[in-house]
Length: 219
Length: 224
Image (tube, rainbow over all chains, first blue to last red):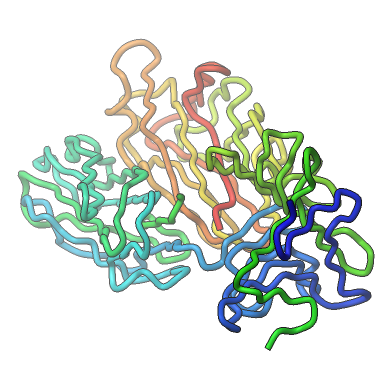
């Protein structure tokens, strides 16, 4: 039995068509306030969009192009890099919290300083790379760590004094898919140990970085 | 105030039901050209879909299964490996653009089958690359690395003494060179993987490993 506002006529599809121009859309509202709008944006190469509010093109959260590529312009995603060298930060066992000086992008505005704060509970992908300079053969221990509120992911644990090249430089990277609760934080720290505090995090500018910290909400 | 064609009756939701069979959908069109169809595909385990055109099941861009798993069959995504060992490509500091010519998949056809991915739209792309080096000598102590070179930035890591770290027996191999990043790409920007080993002569190979047992590769996906 059909309920009020229901459509169950198999011979009559629902087609929304504004005519020669304009968006083809469905507005979802509560108490007269447009909450989300779903439709085809006639002003954006006919992309399919789910947008906040009452207009396609203003606060688009989900976009499908005519070729099927999907982007999510408001999804939490960030990339931090180092443009300037950080000198004498570790080597003697000091655990150094990496201070990133360049924000390449911070989609959704969840990064403050060098810390990302999860806006919602979910699974987040994080990637980090660090390159050290000034390493001595004495620095036989060390690590790079992704510190989240729930867990600390420690990797790149090795004899950095042996890993270094003839320029006394060495760098590694690793990634994790981490469980984060809303308002949980994540940052990067590192340590080289058993030597003196002369190890640097070396850089090559923000365009060709040797060091980065990136992340995004996966699901 | 309700506008034309609006539904604001609090006591009645909008339900689309084709009856015993058929898709439950809404067709979005502009000037009689069908652009997208949103709905439940009755012929495909009642999955929710956002499809291009005027049919569910033909050009599906976004799928939610009855269990809630989400796939994006047209999303830009690729995976490629070496097709054969690349011999004597570096070792003397030569910067080598790695040819990943065994394409495992190339969803949306944005990888050229050789070395280069081209971004179809502006966005954030997650890339990963890794490789197995072989034929090293203890003299390969110089600047060695792997990097993903994009139009906007080049991401270099896995810096180290490859000669010293390579396995001491056989063909002296090392398999720790790996790079992963979420990169900003503009539409038509490209990404390739490059590497260099330094300190001695040009005798270092990039080893295949095996097509079904890869020791490296180049992978990427459009994230957001």
